[in-house]
Image (cartoon, rainbow over all chains, first blue to last red; front, side, top):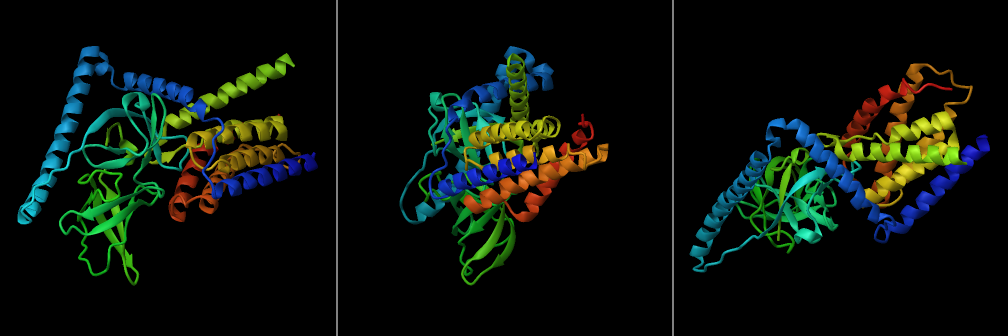
Length: 258
Length: 152
């Protein structure tokens, strides 16, 4: 009996270690990735039932529809206001240079968050829009408050979004007022780190970070977070803790932009 | 044979429902580790083969759905399934506290295996302090169930 247990443990440890060593230098493989969709259909169904119970007054179709429409309108307006602010700043700088340039951001879809993923790590959310709605891998995801993450996996009706707080996530940013550039990466605990800001630069608590657009993945001007703490510095760069504007544990609706 | 297939079908259903609940619910940033409970139950009540099989099955589903490295959850849940069978030995005198402590420790062990596997073979998912907090919280949430899963 004991030998059988030890044998099972040995087989398990050796097989999984070999599997992980094999994948560590390659892309992870998922032989049953097609089971994701039916499972997500069930999750989405439960999500809808839950919302139906939670908001009984909103169950009247017309009211729900109108509310949804207004929410989307509000999200768009909030984004427009933020964009205006950024455009204003940009305009001032560009006027000084006697050039005119405007960036544009296109909303691909507005999606609802149906799940926070199956495991603690990676930090992902599942949204109820996918390839059928024009979403592609690598697209940026945001709310009116700021950057949420990027699409890492697309299925026909669903997509997986890697959150800004995951250590595998990084985005090129700049400090809004000083225009200092850096890289924001997730820390895994709901916060982020701002890296590669030279020690010569002036950095203070509360400064706002926005995407710089230099990484070619995220459009410029999306609010990312604010500097919460200057944790330290090495010979060249600061170590800065950033609090994202988006509260990843409370996401309900997000926008996918290109 | 028919009886066995029925049981396998029933437990597959229970595991899938648990997985769906786990996918749906989270406490702020912390996802629960509810799938450990059927694995623990099967390992403890039905022996190492049932514990091992269910652990590997649950781990396989979790690794697939996580979209990351394949293996950490298989190892964690599989080990819990086999180790839980040791508790059914006569060496241990079952009292509710044994069940509570065991489920707590197994939850922490499972989380630790996933954390270490990702740190070694992929990227460190979070700091040690944050990991410890998350693992203990999940262990505390799971542990009361252990008091109700009796031997025999």
